[in-house]
Image (cartoon, rainbow, N blue to C red):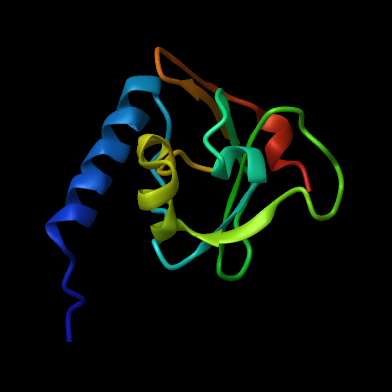
Length: 122
C-alpha cells in the first residue's frame, strides 16, 4: 500500500526544495520520524540557531542544531524526532532538506546557508 502524506508534509518538502534550489544544494529528504541532535539553548528558542548536517546513520538525519556556545560535551545534543520541531522551532524546518555537508545559521531577520566539505569527512 502506498504511504499517504499529509498536506503539511508536502508543503514542508516544497519549502525544503526551495531552500535547496536557492543555494544550489542537493535535496535529501529529512524523515519526520528520524532524529536530530539539538541543544537545550535551541529548544529554549535562543537565536541565532546553527545547524550542520553530517551523513546520516540508522534512524538519524545527520542534523545537529544548537544555539549559544557550542560544546563537545557528550550531553550537549539531545536526541529529538524531527516532527517535534513543529512545536519547538518551526522556522528551521525549511533547512532540513539540505544534504549532508551543508550548514545554516538562522535568526529572525538573518539567514546564512553554506557548504562545508569537512562535515563529510569520516
